Image 1 (cartoon, rainbow, N blue to C red):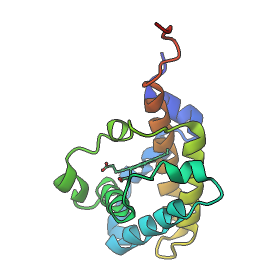
Image 2 (tube, rainbow, N blue to C red; image 1 turned 135 degrees about the vertical axis):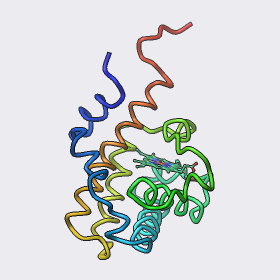
Image 3 (spheres, rainbow, N blue to C red; image 1 turned 60 degrees about the vertical axis):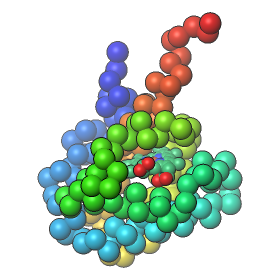
Image 4 (cartoon, protein in one colour; image 1 turned 180 degrees about the vertical axis):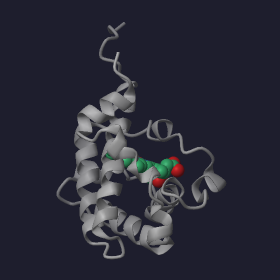
Length: 160
Ligand code: HEM
């Protein structure tokens, strides 16, 4: 059986070496805290304003925008070489478990990545090379979460 990581690589088109290139360079040191705050603010502004794809925006209906921004940038900071801001406040990220209430489908991952690509493109504090490194990690992780989401409804299980 394919592991979640293998599914993530196949579906995202990003192999593990490219996804985890974030561990060979310290993006937090390079970019600084404000770049991460700006990126997550930019991203969630796009998500909460998504009028073209209302179904996507509705996934975030029970989350407060300001909290979602903080959750995301604190996680990115700690995952990309900075202090463990997220875990100090909330514990282990356990991303699959924390996404369990939400429908993290292939389509949702593509919409999430669409907003993230646009957010990166309009965050001038992040240089082009760092954007590529970040996007490879984010794309792989998005599909890792899709693979985790499918564990909720294993297709092989027969209905009872
Ligand atoms: C694939 C599509 C995705 C969907 C539909 C999705 C959806 C959501 C939603 C609805 C929340 C709740 C907002 C909040 O209260 O913080 C959330 C939280 C979060 N997401 Fe995602 N997400 C996706 C991908 C990702 C990816 C790729 C990452 C990391 C690389 C990520 C990291 C996080 C983190 C750290 C939180 C905060 C969790 C918490 O503290 O409860 N998400 N996501």
